[in-house]
Image (tube, rainbow over all chains, first blue to last red; front, side):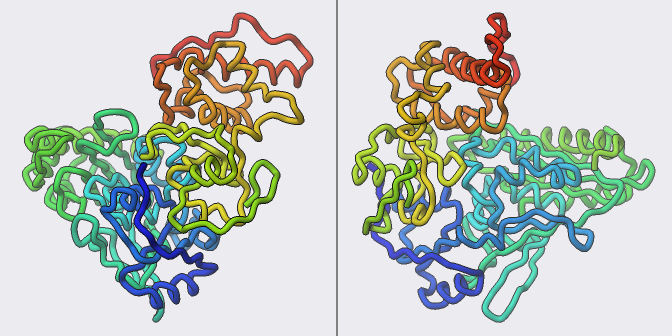
Amino acid sequence: MQVPAHFEYERATSVDHALALLAKFGPESRVLAGGHSLIPMMKLRLAQPETLIDINDLAELGYLRVEQGELRIGALTRHAELLGSALAGQHFPILHDAERRIADPIVRNRGTIGGSLCQADPSEDLSAAFAAVRATMVIRGRTGPRTVPEREFHLGPYETVVTPDELLTEIRVPIRPGGGSAYVKVDRRAGDWPVGAAGAALWLDGDTIAEAGIGLAAVGAEHFSAAEAEDFLRGAPATGDNFVRAGQIAAEHCRPISDQRGPADYKRHLADELTVRALRLALDRACAGEA
Amino acid sequence: MTVNDTEYAADVEPRLLLIHFLRDHLGLTGSHWGCDTSNCGACVVWLDETPVKSCTVLAAMADGRRVRTVEGLGHGGELDPVQHGFAECHGLQCGFCTPGMMMTARWLLDHNPDPSAGEIREALSGQVCRCTGYENIVRSVRWAAEREAAARSSAPPGEDADYGPEVAG
């Protein structure tokens, strides 16, 4: 029987209350959102916070809306809500592609977008998807909000720039016309973490790539992205040959490790091939006007 | 916490999981405690209106909320059509996964009254039947869907509906 170690439980009634509780209980406290990463880690005693601050009552953090040219996603939005959002799918099919492959429908009912990002697992699909579309994170502290680009959000495995007295409150994705996006993933079985996964977002100016975003999960890509491959694509014609070269560049800059999900050379191969597939699908969608 | 329309109050340790509160404190042993790792889905109950894996929810998180377990699936002594379906179509062998399967199936039919076999498989994809009796589970859910459709239209359920396996899913 897996049981967490002893801890104290507090339930926040507002964002300000959550921040006050975080300040009161200090670095040994943890925010409890969906709990589908944190509670399993606590059962295995990989995490032993002294206090959990339950934010599930903060309905103010559960929303999806378009505001000021951005898709804005409250951090407490459940995976199932993002997957069920026609608004999100219309602007960023990459998010639906990724969500469809995250865990299973029951886990998605409970797990949250903010929780997944703050868990900062190197294999987290949404971290790569949001890197591809250059999202911005809104982090609230007691002195007010600050914004951090998604690509600067993660400091390393299981570590983000969110300090112990702060709370991730919102994810913002800029909406630009003429774009298309997609996410492709290889996993060992349905609902598993990826062996490798790639997301791509393209914005076209005629046949030329005005801007490209490539996100990579589980293959040791710095900041979950492939900046060198993006640089290669920017300003280039949107051709299959260029996508193939971009895949090679993305793979060259990855540092995958061998583990139970696969050997490093296979993961590097996936980084290459999946980047190409995601770019092709993103281009098809951009041409079809599917965003 | 309100469980199956009955209010309960208890002082519990923060680390007590909802599945153990339901089983050990309230004696509602219909929900099964399976893998303990949010993989198998034997412990699925509704939290408010949503199926969740209760091995990965703290009892304290359900404080002030509504929980529905398999014991609350029937209505006034009458089995739910989903329960009838599992009985009619041999939807269970050992029965361990059955309560969780039925809670998710009920939720599915409430939101999609006429699901395809593929949609049923997708909805139940976070739940494991250790007897691998998935074919009959899908048939059971389809049976319930048709029974409810018939009840709505007062017409007899179709006998030749295609609810065989689908390649995609």
